Image 1 (cartoon, one colour):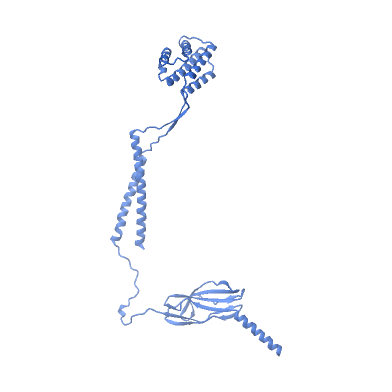
Image 2 (cartoon, rainbow, N blue to C red):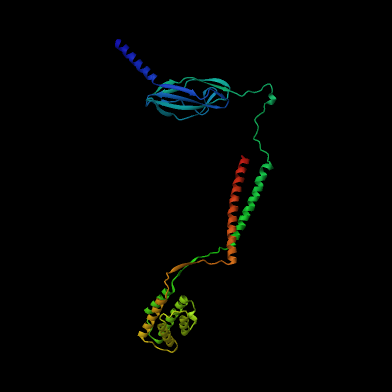
Amino acid sequence: MKHILISAILSLAVGVGHAQSVSVVSKIDTMTILIGQQTRMTVDVTARKGAKVVFPHFKRTQYIVPGVEVLDDTKADTSDVDGMMRVSKTFTLTSFDEHLYAIPGLKVKVDGKSYASNQLALKVITCDVDTLHPEHFYPPKDVQDNPFLWAEWSPLFWMGIVLMLLVLGFGYLVLRLKQNKPIVTRIRVVKKIPAHQRALSEIDRLKAEHFETADEQKQYYTLLTDTLRKYIRERFGFNAMEMTSSEILEQLQSVGDDTKIDELRELFNTADLVKFAKYSSLLNEKDMNLVNAINFIDQTKRDEAPTEEKIVPKLTEDEAKTRQNRITIKTLLWTVAVVAVGMLGYIVYHVYLLLE
């Protein structure tokens, strides 16, 4: 008997300790609501970790007590608190009858054992009604249609008219812009080569070619003298291309340049004989004349370096006017576009406010 009594006491102590380790607490957001309002009731279960917790299940609009409906419930939320497990579940309640309700403790099963939470109270009140003056009590009113006020809509109407005119003006300006074709001016960069370099390059090209027959010799001396004439025109400033050989020599003497004048005279005389008297020069004579031309250019050249010159085309009066018209039209297009977009945004925003 003594051993049986000790075992029973130990079993009771273990059961009491296990029971004390489970806590079920209910709380409500507010204890007073108006008819039709909602409140939330939360049930917190504290138990050992890993315990199986089962909450009561309510269907939608099911009464938890007569007069108090359960509209919804949330999923159970689990968290750790001081080495224990806390499981919380929230129920949404409402009522449509004025009364003070006692909500009994909810029964929750933990590891198959049932535990009840604490009781709660919910007071449902209604709006005061003046029963002494029933004529002042009005039924619910239907949805009213607000009257149309022209004063509210007239600014937006006239702004819409102005916006349409701006759109038409924008289209007209686009057509004008297409009619005024763009004036394209290209800046050309011209490399200016000194006269002596250009002449020596031409003479080098003549040296590389072979002129043996009478017609070829005539062509050779024509090219050689033309190269010298162009050089003299650019170097000394008189039009040697339109002058005879003797006139060129006299002009060179008059400007005070006697450099290699005798060799140049011999070159021009030989060229005239070949071109007009069908004279056939010897090979060494042709080479000597070529050397004389090179020496004349070297001794009379100026020390100049190649330069680059930008040539900007000049616009005619009509082209300048067309370009200015395009600039003006583009400016107007951007202005009209910005104003139109701003007005459209203003109209849409205020129409939305009026329709709300």
